[in-house]
Length: 182
Length: 281
Picture 1 (tube, rainbow over the protein chains, first blue to last red):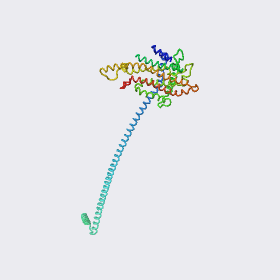
Picture 2 (picture 1 turned 30 degrees about the vertical axis):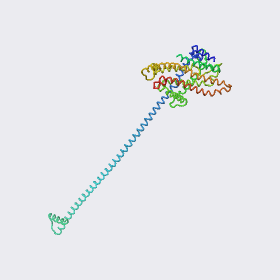
Picture 3 (picture 1 turned 60 degrees about the vertical axis):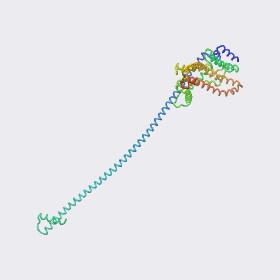
Picture 4 (picture 1 turned 120 degrees about the horizontal axis):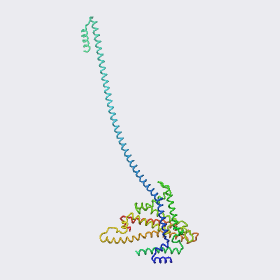
């Protein structure tokens, strides 16, 4: 109570600041030393704690953002790749279908061509065979006619006992052949 | 002005007399820190604030010694602490201001918190050389809390002026807020000018309020623990004080938070250009 009265008395005398300063021992040198302490601690804390930690947090944040960007890029590339692959598969399918169709068409054409060639070849062979047979027949006919004529002439000569001239032989042959063929 | 000064003085004198009265009645801790040397400005309280500072710096050095992208152990804890504080302050100050000022607000919070909690270590304030305790809580010295408040005030002026410009700073305090025309405009200029003068007193009294609030809470806590231990037989002296240790842990945290929050809010108010800055005043 006495202290309270003393302090009030000091306050009433017009200088409460002095009472505060004296009571709490607020001193210029002590205050300056404490301000210096505060500044040093703040500086050291900023340099050794906040600086490196905030830098690391910022670096990590940047890495996360970069990672997210990379993931987006990869997702986009994957989507593009899927799309490209689907397009390539579709294109390959179309190409394959086209090639199969072309192959089928080619095969059909080739088959037709070969069949035609075979038919043509067979026809040629047949024509050749027919021609050969005709030629053989004609040759044999001619030989037969000649042999027949010689036999007729020989027979006529022996029967008549005279020597036949070339005109006689020709006439007799033609008569005999006309009768045979008649 | 005289009324404001005399009212403030009356309150301060009241606080002093209360402390002084308690000191006399219970023979508790002295109101001021004890000087260790006669010719050097070093007190028992200052030694404790050095210990707190050294511990904080040591922790910071150890936590940031081998920084890894994937944090673990003490680095993880330090990052959690700093990031939480940063995000908390960013919510108050905004992204731009917090980038400029985090070193101060974060530092002050950690420093005050560490100092408050170290002051609760057994032996601090209780082991005495004669009548004076050998060690005393860092913030149980008005020189320390006043130093913190003065540094905060100087930085507040610096940041307020660099953010607003000198004219912007003065307009922020004295100019009318809102759109007025005709006689109403003149009236508002006069009213806001007077409000500005009150605001100036409020700004000038902030260091006093900040320093006495922190000092008062910490000193009262230490005194209370001291008194509690003297209530019973010395063999069980710890028992009555034990619940109050938990209370003081909470008070230490709250006071660090209050100091940081108030200084941050004061800065945000003067740098705020938003629509709600009339309400802030």
